Image 1: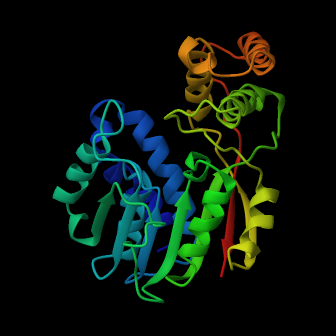
Image 2 (image 1 turned 135 degrees about the vertical axis):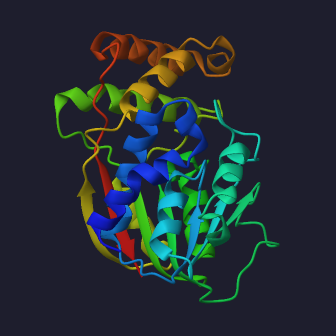
Length: 284
């Protein structure tokens, strides 16, 4: 399916998401971003896809459209169906499953592919996809082990994540918010946020051979319309004010986090903080 076809279908795909009931414009923007990604990948109708970190199914819906009625998407997430707000993962999945794309999707929440009980025969999938979910892993080691675990299950890997290297000054607030959250996690105060282990594109490229993958392509992705910069700034400032999360940090780290939060407040806008760019990496 080409870019034009998927882009044209983005409004109907977005309308089918449960989150569209709360923020239709936001959902449409997020869906268009994922439609552009999938349209640039070589996912043919009839393909089988394993999606890791599916969340509420923003990418799942686009993948299901791309594979067509003869294709299949197995959408996996370690979180339970009750996770998420204002719409839970389970509520969003239920909406998608009840719609026209439902027969093509198999949601599996509360599922860790590192659990030995989770297994698929070699070559079950044409593609494995990780889209804006890898910073949610508890560590780089866990990501490496996950990529190694799925290596025999799928022929190709399609990976996209935020790019830590800012392209302009107005992305610095998003960058700082991400780094502060990652620092709090790394210093021993784990939470449930979207940012737990931020890492660079270069770190991923170093990691792939260790997991048995050979990178064969990489590119940049436009994120200008996305709202994630504002979301992460707000999440970071909320976190910096959460005494229970900071109390477990050593005093030097706590003071460093608080000072960085001061800087973030000084450089961030109330609204309209430009999101970092994103990148894609493909591998076989």
